Length: 409
Image (cartoon, rainbow, N blue to C red; front, side, top):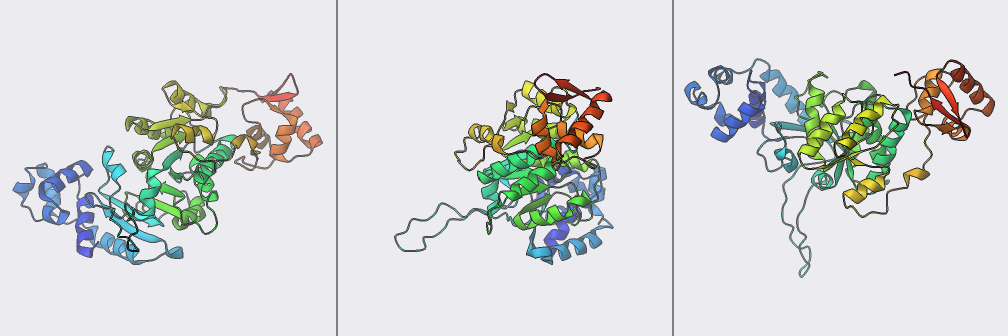
């Protein structure tokens, strides 16, 4: 993209009161943004309101500094040489899957190993050799076999472990994991997808759709994770550089997560959760929605249970997902054989606290041996803490040597 072309696109996005819908109408009527700004106010008013036409005729004060910042960002190779690109609506390189969503972005900022390029026929290398069907970039290939993995920002330890394990198993089966870089399930899903990469692999493991400009990382504790994704995946944003983590941006970006992926898996979610927005959008696009069931006592399971009632497919393993998506792969491990270290998977505080132990117990009945395997506590110490929880009314002993957390909700 040339600098003048970039300036015109940025100006269109910055024009006060001119949203994506009005901008798309202008592009249909006049072509590229530079042509839009050549029109008279009266001509513009044939497409947009008088107020919008007035805004389009005046160059935004913030355009010049944003252009300088964006142009410099594009030229900078960044940490590890991650590629930086911008693709715009109407470009042959624009991801086709986003053209079918409501309110497709005018501009997409990309950072990482993926690249949008249009398909091109490949000539045979040797005489008599059959030509391959097309050259497609890693991102296009990845999106053809992709799944969104989303869920709570405050998952249970088991939920966080499930997110990482499912993402790793799906990654080993060749799927690219799409998520939102948020705390909790999103972060665990990105980590699991990265875990699935073989040494030296150039496969696009994961795509993170963020709600800020790509010159920022939110939350800050995911800075190292974002750098890993830039090297082995792709970060995508529709927001200009410098955009802070505004609350309204995060539900809005969910339409991109649903649009880019071929299906959506919800790990854990409360009834009022942004993950349910992603699931709904995915279903409206005719895509599969999967949900992992949980305990009836856990608020983090209620969103998944609601989805299942509405027709989402209940899954208990990564293989369930692969079968529904008709992906034949023997690479997905049997999740039942993977021990879950619930304490290290997301419990907060030290193992000596009630909160950490309750988090490790979860909401389903658990035996002493299984709980000890999760936490690594010695038998005497664990039994003492369990007794304390029982006396405090937070735990009940069940027949068969099982323990269950008591719900106070």
